[in-house]
Length: 180
Image (cartoon, rainbow, N blue to C red; front, side):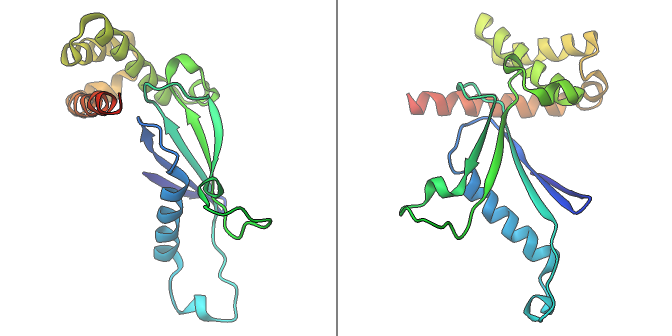
């Protein structure tokens, strides 16, 4: 997870999700509440003076194998058990599918994210062709470095990326088998 404040806006980026989950707004609510508590919790919240807080913007990036729309809004109220005319609490999360083949606008504006998305796309294609995940990851990391795709990052952190992707994609495959 990553969050930062720019111009009184609090941008919250959830880690890239490789599994679709309708519970992302609930998870974001918990995360945001904890962060606000750390940011402003003091005697001031019991005073007569209004405590100003940064305006949140909530995002999740999806890069998993299941089909999903390029963008959608996920709302906490979709999980409410009872319908009501007036919603007392809402959390809206912008869901963005950053799979390379989906062509999300953010990939055009952020070369690092586009490179990471392309790397995952290449690995999935290579793994489908050969059935060898570890070999596919190694081959695609080398190819990205040769072609200048997030090359500096991969040169410095290639081993970590290799370990992370192997563990993450292996877990993803296991979850897919369990769900079938």
